[in-house]
Image (cartoon, rainbow, N blue to C red; front, side, top):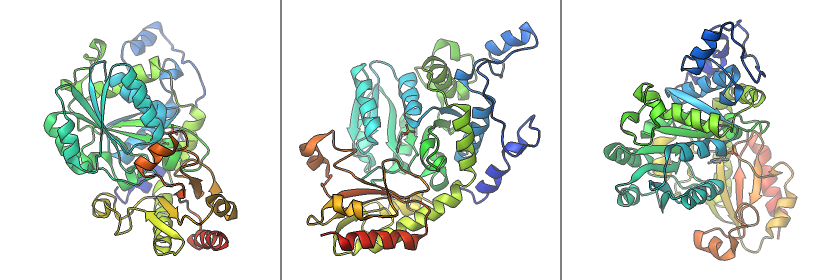
Length: 411
Ligand SMILES: *Cc1c(COP(=O)(O)O)cnc(C)c1O
């Protein structure tokens, strides 16, 4: 991301068209919008830009969307109530029965569950180990429409071979959808790996303060929508480059209704102003913790892309602007009781969620991977003593001291 991103974002709102100069875009809470004339009202219904009913967006969500578009250097963005609502809109509005989707096997658990719903509706899904792009290539079929990966996987921290996948998608004219939540456009803009759409959960780093849920879909402008077969007749009249996002907005917001509230949009937009500062601080903290724990006698393994031992360390170096993310997973030695260890922590919050100002920690097998059962956990490599740590922006010395005292006290 360009070093000017903070400059752009903090001055963004007061420069919006029609703004009063207020440094934040106002919070519009109206459900409906009234028109001075019936002709104006009908014009907006027939495609002129404007607002009719807030299920399809408000000036407050538009202001946030344009900030996100700038961060991703995309062409346009649509916001949603949550990251899951954004993903639901992408998959359900762009895929049809009989289509084939290739997905990375290392994806967010709820997305995995969403894809199983999709599969029940007649969309074929092939899961591949996307850390090797050859697996993606080998899975392509005649009816393949879309390839889906995340930019960094949770909790294993695997990194898909995104540059090569982007090339493969370009060559085969497939839509590459990248869930960029874990690294944010500040570490990696989706367009760098030729993604056509990027999805961000705004509930995580983008908002950053753990006080609002949201999601977004950004068109990077790289995908040729004129050849995409699933665009509804009614949207073929808009210019080709806008068709994908128009369909996502019309069907995903207007029909499905997972709309971001103005209040949440406002909080997230404020959070975005400090994204680069927060990310730099949290990534630095994560690197320090990973280095400290990598050689700790009571730690079996540390999974963090910043460590040279990480299988995709070189890839992370190449892709992530010199940083390695804020998520690490740490496997304690078997003799330590993971619950006693967690209860000894004083600074880290015992909580799910990621990408918060606060450092959060979770015993993986007992929480987010509990439902899958012991056998499947063993197959996918989730040991009972695995911790997921989402590192925040606290003073690194406090975090290191807390982790060390908790581990020293644990038997
Ligand atoms: C959290 C998360 C989501 C879902 O976002 P919500 O805003 O919580 O719905 C999607 N993808 C990834 C990678 C996530 O971490």
